[in-house]
Amino acid sequence: MARWRLWCGRNIYHLAFTLTAWVLASACGGPFQVEAERPLAEEISLPPGIVVMPVAAMSHKAGAIEVAVRSSDTAAWLLDNTELTVLGPLDFKTLKEVDDANLVSTDTDLSTRSDTERIDLAGWWSIHILVTESRANSSRRIVDTNASAEGKTVSNVAGIESQLRMELTVREAMRGRVLAQVVLIGNDELLHGGTPGDPRPIIRQLIERGLAMVFEPVLERLQPSPQRRIRSAQALPSAPALMALGFLNLPSLAESMAARKEFERETAMIGVWERLFPDLPPQVTIPATRNPGVLMLQSTLPLERFDIVMAIDGHQVRDRYQLDRRLRVCGPTCRATLWRSGAQVELPLNLPPVPRPVAN
Image (cartoon, rainbow, N blue to C red; front, top):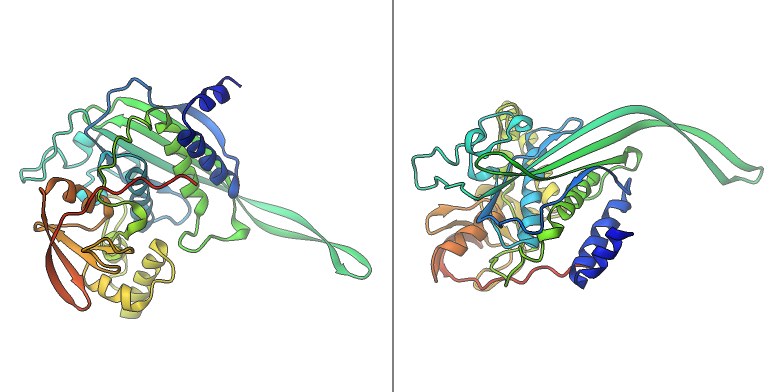
């Protein structure tokens, strides 16, 4: 009751945000069990930016593409709910296995590079997510009262019972000190299958609810006047870039498919596009596969729908957080390289800040 009074005392945005997270959690296999909850302290000093470490997706048959997509989704949540500078797995090399990479300063090359991309991690935060799964055989009795004129019928249906555990930790990027942590557990109804774009939607729900719980005390401070040049609904990350993303213990999907037949590799690429945005037409995915970049889903003049933004001032961009970051630091007018209607185009680009999405 005390927690409920505290939430009600906050502004209506935070109340809507919290209720939305609860509804999402309850929609598939929820509500989730909270095993541990330690949100960020309200008075904590805010960072100049946050590093999204590769999501350690240790669920059934999860490979490098699962890590890549879940990491991109995590960065997208930050794009929509904060104004922090975001770095993700496409920005650095991870030097340890994804479930053992806990210290950005030593477990990535961000602070040791000799090029201009070297990052001063002082004051930065990092997000670490570990998803594990336990499976067991299950049997369910299904009663059908309309099966026949004689009355109800009863049948036994065998299946798999899955319990997912999601551990989300916020650390100091330089020294690894734990700043916040939440652990959630949810049961997945595997008999029901996935949803368009996501074969395991409960994993996304666990991660998004965990992010909401951890950041809620500082959410208002992390949302000053809008600074973002792009939000998650406006564009898609590059499917070929995510397909090429590999890790120390996980070869990239592109590498694992290298010896396969061409049609099998093409089918795998179509599957990645389906994960990102179901039902994109081939006239969009084919050029976006051949010309990797951030694929625009909405027109934001001078950008047009289905433009592929490949570089800003010569720096390649492959995910939304990279495009946002480059647009915020390149000066009053940036030079964008993009693919449009079958040709490479260069044009000046000065996008205004984009308001935050409204909580449903």
